[in-house]
Amino acid sequence: MKKFGSSALDRRAFLTGVATAGMAAVASSAFAQQSDIGDILSAPKRGNWDDQFDARSTSRGKVASFQPIASPETVSFIENAINTYSQIVGNGGWPTVPGNVKMQLGVVDPAVSVMRKRLIIAGDLSQSAGVSNSFDTYVDAAVKRFQSRHGLPADGVMGQYSLAAMNVTADVRLGQLQTNLERVRKLASEDQGARYVMVNIPAAQIEAVEAGRVAQRHTAIVGKIDRQTPILDSRIHEVILNPYWTAPKSIIQKDIIPLMRKDPTYLEKNKIRLFDERTREEVSPESVDWSTDDAVKLMFRQDPGKINAMSSTKINFANPYAVYMHDTPSQGLFNKLMRFDSSGCVRIQNVRDLNVWLLRDTPGWDRQTMEATIASRVNTPIAVTNPVPVHFVYVSAWSTGDGVVHLRDDIYEMDGQKALSIGTNT
Image (tube, rainbow, N blue to C red; front, side):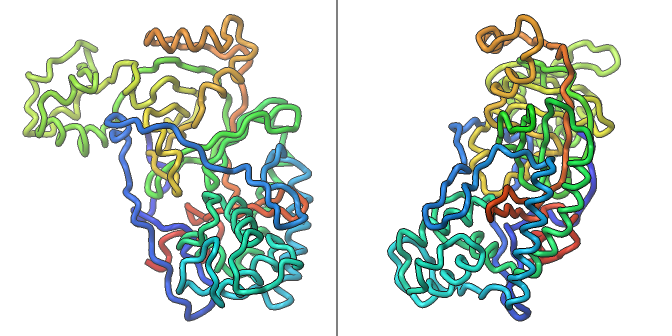
């Protein structure tokens, strides 16, 4: 995959942002950056984020919605949110929540009353709940609602990431909404297609949209800071079941060659075969001098199977960046707080559901046939009868109405607010 964009940052923590001038920087995340080759080595159990939280502590709408981001309704709702946030800023914003105690259900501390005020102002907690020092079930539900709106695991615990997101100032959030209003307005004005797939990069989320409603929503993993997923428009023309995976030269040099020096059986264990790029003839690993980087001149191709880096599926669409969408054997990565781990391509959770949706008009490809084909481990390219438009977009703030404002980190620093980008204060 080709690199899109660049950054000196090689790791980031979530929303290290800024509540007031003088506020100490929030510690950056210690999560490990995992290379694509790591996907070959392990395949943790599939997991899900709880994005469907229905707050009981407020009369406002549900966080989950079938409304697409690229819609005139979203434009209107963002405009309403801007009016609301302008009033909040005009009234002095919201207070900074102290970080001296880990707040969760059952805690009694003066910091809880400050957090209650913060949640009430943003509409996550009803005013009738009051501003006591008790972290009760109403506060627990309000915190979960806040976390869901910010793309955080809705566990009700105020850890460093939730605290950092909560302490981004109201005026910064207002600016974020204003910036993204123009993006969504442009998207809504364009003909996306009756059926289309939209990858929202900062949300690490995919929408499959049909007849103006989200038919499917998928958690995604997108590009690292220094290997960014590009913004693009194309059409999905092919779904490959049981794909081959060809290792990029960067991974060959940085990962595979060092691993072969330690374990000469590594390629065999991981079902990776070598080919001469010119003649396409297979090359024996024993004939390669692994003490040098000469192996970079060869093609490293992994056979289809459970440990294949793309697992069951590769989804192709024409683009100048050599990126695509695919499955992964490492389903546990979808549980990560920061899902910016790829080399530019997009990994999709529950990709087989999307396959069925994409191949709906392609004769002979129902769910049963697809599953049987995957089980066969035979490489099977399928031309999509009616190619489906796909759009990679960058929207870090939007609203689904009724006071539900979604806010994400400006992972690639495109919003023009340093307070919203990760790693600013590290």
